[in-house]
Length: 305
Image (cartoon, rainbow, N blue to C red; front, top):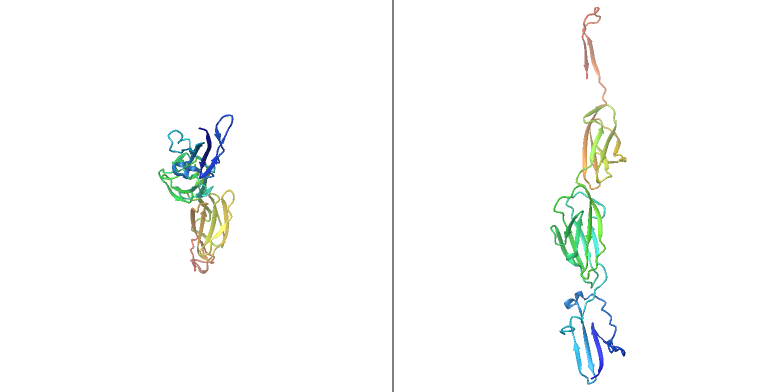
């Protein structure tokens, strides 16, 4: 009995196959569905083959067929890479927290195969943390997940490298994201070379001088405040030196110098300076003998207000 028709159904569409006269085989080109099969039942698209002979007898082959069932399960993979987004800290950020949390997102396209959790990893310097590693948490978001990793041991002051890798369920690898973060838990150094503390002077003109530095979060900003006045910004040189001219008020003056580094850590030095411009007044001078004999001892008494 001759075969009159062979057709195949994929994704709800039937396609007729054409018999090759020389080989006797039936053939047609099918177009794979535009979406990944990962989200389909069984993670494949079923193909149905229907063969009809001249007598009108139809034989159908489906995915349950013992001989051809596995062949009729079409696996379709999408080619779009998932996207990694570093939320915080930002690239090159300086932070004062030596257990600074790292927050990032991994998302796949709508209708894609989705983010494969087991292929998400975060590397901090040489230590790799898996999606379910100690200190890592994750929550589902649209088309993916958001991850937060909190270091379990304090990071040393200085620069640290963060690297994030991920794949989707179809094996597409995201473009890795690499960034640096600078940890700074140490306040800047601050040294005041002038004036000395508890200085007493009769000159209202005074210059505050000093040096500052921070090894990991330069540049350092410096402010100088006199008594209850507002803090004034001071220019800091490339060598960390700074100076600020002040005009003292009569009596006790309090000078407050604050150095602040890039993460907000501060060092403060306070100096007390007393300005006394009063002129001493003599109310009496008494000599015990005047005139006095040659080589005779005399006493002078001075009374001062």
